[in-house]
Image (cartoon, rainbow, N blue to C red; front, top):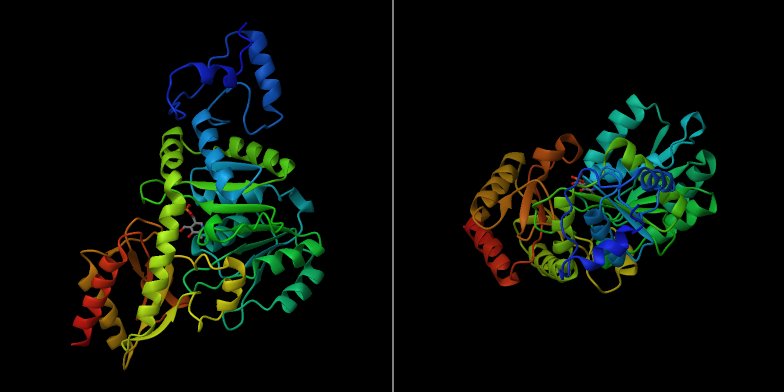
Length: 400
Ligand code: PLP
């Protein structure tokens, strides 16, 4: 029998400074006794097992990438999944216990794909009692929120730190404090703000989620998700669910993520700084009616953002709206702008890429945000001068 654990083994092999890509589907377990012990230990659902069994359960390259994220989030554990959506599904599964499940409350200003998942899977297929909480004038009324929590006693509250595309910043600390007063668990999608700006776990959130496809990977070249937390019981339940439904990230993507995430703070801090400068510039342009950016004083949640993010930045997303006499003129300006910047700023439906990219809001959100002149920018980490020149040249051509 080989009594060595994986930890003993991995140290001696090659003098590489990184965890390699272990593509093994199943790992060698040597003999019946080792196998029996490994499977018995497996039911404890530890994040890092002594011996790996099967990559759908856990994989050393994935575990190593999780450690990089734990450092960033300052969390006790992190679990990587194949996408942001599978991280959301895994996080929510922890609080689903058959008929005894109390209502789940979702803030309405969250990623459209999450809303579709809630409606199509959680409500229609799984029959969960789903409740929504909506903002008024682009701000959440926390007195009303507390009144609803008292009556509903929801099992969970689900929010995003910065919403999409209006970039409403949630008053995360107060929302957590209210929810916790009534025994409600809090799940926060922190994709847009990242741990660089906000650490909801430190404020008492139960689970923080990221679409790691975005700023953590930062290069638009992989799809991944992660859920992080401090409570071991939550982790064990999430590991069990991830294993049963097969949500775990592939070792190849984990390797690339673990490498790319090392430059996360450099990249994201520059993206935030570029976005702040560009938002101020756009806000002064006569062709643009409104700029939504939490760093601008006229944004409805500017003061919440200032308190929550300190002086580190306000995220790297900007939404703005072209003015015009009518819908046709607004739409024409939007389309011409997209064409004029297209060599440098591509229309790509994601965010967090190295270069600035854009999306026409009406074409994606339809009747939810029907303003025809609206554009959402995901600001990249290129030189600000290059970004400014591209945008300013296009706006000057549009004016003439
Ligand atoms: N959460 C937010 C805030 C998102 O913007 C997205 C995707 O755009 C997701 C979750 C889903 O992530 P993924 O596309 O990696 O599944």
